[in-house]
Image 1 (tube, rainbow, N blue to C red):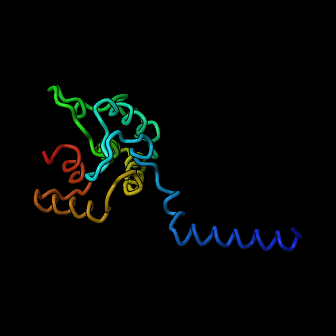
Image 2 (cartoon, rainbow, N blue to C red):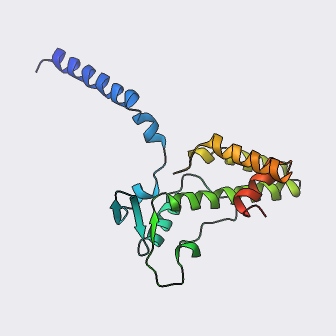
Image 3 (cartoon, rainbow, N blue to C red):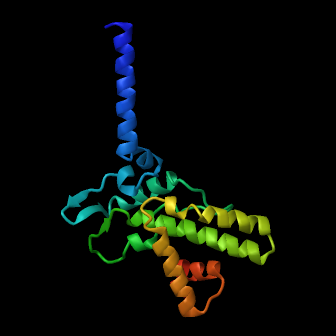
Length: 180
């Protein structure tokens, strides 16, 4: 193959790759963190979805937290095993839908940062409170997290219903204390 033909082939391949990346939205997909079901293959896949078994759940949890794209506040850490929710004391065998671990890890992350922001504000550490508020803007980029606008509206609705005027307090109470 001549040098001119090689150059033409390279240009054509580059153009095709650019079309795939931009047109196929691969650029967006590459920037997203891996979800629980991408990190660990669910044992059960059927017409209802993808599910992890009891036997998998601690591995899924530890893999998700090990690969989590955002850090926790200073002094905080994710548990080494899945929370009690995933380990009922009855003898039933459970299946956990793919995405559930992501959501619970994200809630842990969010609640730890909200608590850090509230504690920092209360102690007068404006720099730490500001850093926490900045970290919380990363919420929508977490694995398996839904529409940020919908989340924000839920917090606003909760605040209006409860009369809470501080949006951080409202979000903390809604997300981290079951509204209490």
